[in-house]
Image (cartoon, rainbow, N blue to C red; front, side):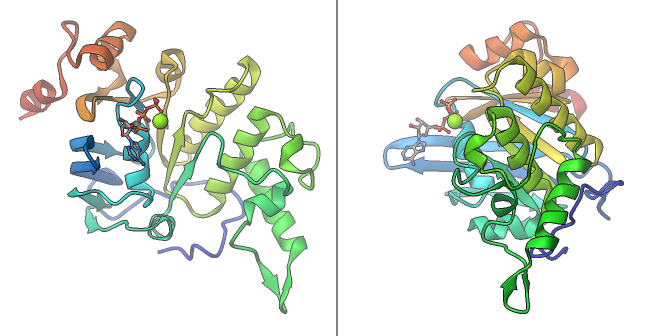
Length: 280
Ligand SMILES: Nc1ncnc2c1ncn2[C@@H]1O[C@H](COP(=O)(O)OP(=O)(O)OP(=O)(O)O)[C@@H](O)[C@H]1O
Ligand SMILES: [Mg+2]
């Protein structure tokens, strides 16, 4: 496994998610994941596959369990039941450190960055490079600049600029760049465009496509169906803690996604269980 303390410095040119497992094996496979908080059952036996080189959109109404599922994968919540297979191997992700060691990075809408720190400091926060006991500012600056350049993030004026002075889209771009700098294989974005204007949303959607083009698995949570239909290869719909549909984007239209989100079924399209049965 790649050393999580050694950033790649830039997005690799070829598929970093390439694995020795069979092509049909997704990078991450979740089976029967359940999670409750006291009396609230947030997830009921959720199955989901996150393949490399594809964007999976996780859809669902408020409270459906999207963030809880993301946090189970990110090592913030430990599921009560269920199994996770990483590159076909059973894994236990109990802490954010376990997730980072596998190559899982999460971009949260608000919590991602420290406002008072500059871009380089944010990208290396908690994983600073040292040289003879001192911070190696030059090498961190070069790696941060190379990563931003590889993602074609060109609107940032100075990487020594405090993050508080960035636009919402630039902040998202820095958070994504931070995620890819650490040898990530899976990047999860929870509502990355919720607070963004049109041009900034465009920039973040372009970034998401660039991540998958470089072979990463991407999971994106979005309430915006225009965004979903623009960037997703696959769609997974949660309703009240249950996975009610999961398939290639082409199996859905906007109305069927809304139907699944609100009623758990759709007359227009097959359900996840029907789709599985049809494949058997
Ligand atoms: N730490 C927690 N303690 C107790 N209940 C929680 C906790 N986190 C989430 N829940 C509950 O789990 C359910 C799923 O919440 P979650 O945050 O995953 O929803 P979501 O799909 O992300 O919704 P939204 O679109 O509003 O962000 C909700 O009923 C929520 O109240
Ligand atoms: Mg949420």
